[in-house]
Length: 118
Image: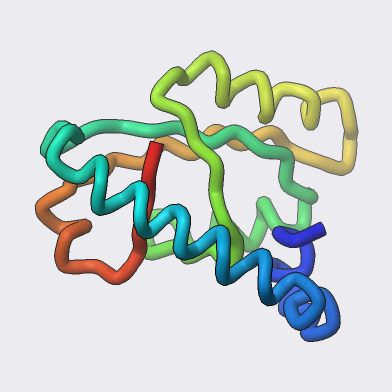
């Protein structure tokens, strides 16, 4: 419900979930600062998900470009775990399973305002 509201910029859901969103963001930020010293400088994470054919076609147009997400993302360092989230979409003819591969450079992330944590 939360990610759907954020993705669709649904003001009613965002307002209703405001307290939770703030608490979640504060918790992720706290974990980020606690874990910063223990993270490798560079690492890779994966995210698997199903996309509608329409969204997939739009995404193909931005190949090589920058993507942004309006929601909280869960990722894994284990490719297979993330692949399992993308695979069910292959059984639906109106969707496509996508595996995002994200290369994280913590030297760049320290200059960013986006917090992440394990």
